[in-house]
Amino acid sequence: MAYHPNLDPEIRAAIEQTPLPALDMPSMTYEALDGFRAQINAFLAAAPPADADVVIEDRHVPGPDGAPDVRVRIYRPAGEGVNRPALYWIHGGGMIIGVPEIDDAMVIGYVEQLGVVVVSVDYRLAPENPHPAPVEDCYAGLVWTAKAAGELGIDPARIAVGGASAGGGLAAATVLLARDRGGPDVAFQLLVCPMLDDRNITPSSHEFADAIVWDRSANLFGWTALLGDRVGADDVPPYAAPARATDLSGLPPAFIDVGELEVFRDEDLDYALRLSQAGVSTEFHLYPGAFHGFDGMVPDAELSKRARAARLAALKRAYGL
Image 1 (tube, one colour):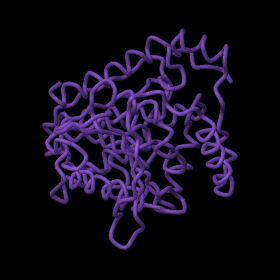
Image 2: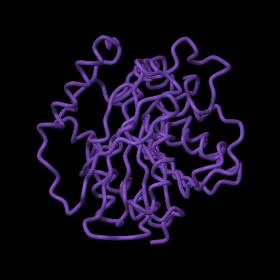
Image 3: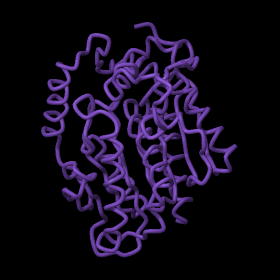
Image 4: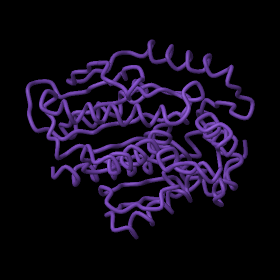
């Protein structure tokens, strides 16, 4: 493919040398999803175990009323500890793919560098489980995390909610639910290139009909899987698409970042601006020449290192470390 002229030169050189694996979303069908999910699981199963002094445990915890239990993957520093900060993490995957294990390396890094406990939620995926199943699973896992704070060695006053891509959108939605349902208390929200707006009407949504990762057609596919015929309609709730929220007051401080060369650019920029206007302390980063998920796919680029360092610094400030 022809790369965007604004693509970061170092990132361009890296992907020209080692092309990224592509998911052909325009030809993707719901029937093909099982095969693609199986590929991800096979890749994860073949990966070597993490070489880290971190205790990893999977549990099944109560799900939403009338729904199945939810699996959470818990990462803790080795050794006893109390009143540690916590990160409740929500993986990405366009609402249609992904499991907590895809973020093992990243969240293990947070545990090692910050001494936090991470709880990562394995929410149900669309289209088999459309809205509100994914966000309700995420909320149920957060409720359990807050209730189990003492057992997990977590300081309940220092629970951050974070996620990337679809997980970033679900994180924003989970935080909205926590505000509107009177808890649990959330100290901070870390929204990494979040998927926020089902309407696909921003300039960047139209601009990136062709993108290195997650173009307009992929985004429409993901949102349609979640919402079906309701996608883009007037009655979509903010817990499905947080950009629909008209009242952003009373939310916890936020960190939002996004690449210049991605569909989510403008909706993320707008959400950050509206959070600030609603009195929510907000840090926003727009990474020039960056595509969706660039820091994970070209991790050694200077821009990728800057992005990861900024997130780490934001969490340190939020936790008072």
